[in-house]
Length: 280
Image (cartoon, rainbow, N blue to C red; front, side):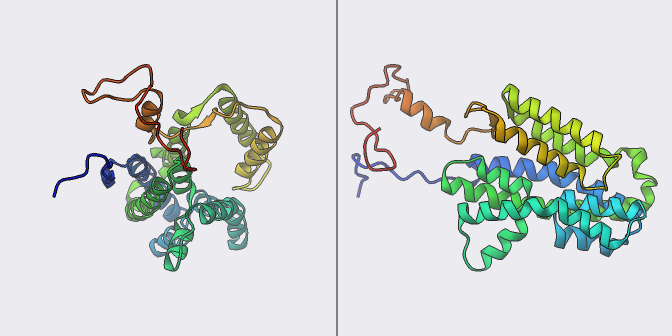
């Protein structure tokens, strides 16, 4: 039985060809690698291997983890360390509400999604517009970062004693450098770049005067204030590395004939139906 030429064959998305999956995997590798710095810094701050692994497995929030060991290394109490980590981890609660509304996980997936809701998984998911791509991006980045972060945390913790002072190797700045490396190429437009620079300056100025973990909250307040009063263009901001809908955009502006050449006029025999059932 042959295929009906009048019906479009369903496009089976291959997982490794999914833009969201590719982005999620690349972010997982980049983020997981600097788990080495956390593991090494943690054991040199006074925590043992199992305490370090417990932080990565259970807390699983890079910024909060660094804030925790930063307070401990500075001689602060456990309560102060937990307070700093909690303040910095509050953003994950906001992410959770967004992810819950976006993906609507059910059953055991709700608990898994709660644990995997971090900066990277949220950004990968919300950077897509197709619901299936949003799910693929979230789970790929979340699971990928969780596995690699804990693996390299263990390696850093085991090698911490042999490395000596992690600061001599620059591991104390590895997390910041990796974050900037991920963020900066995605800033599109002059205003987002200006906001990033102002927030970085606010963070640097706040460091000598506030406890560890709080400067990032100061930067968040500054960014929120600028965003509230600004009138930036809607097409400026953060963009994913790969546009998952480039082919769709090309089809809307000029269809491809049977020879593979695009018709610049954009005229087609049949107008494609939009999501509301009408015609585009």
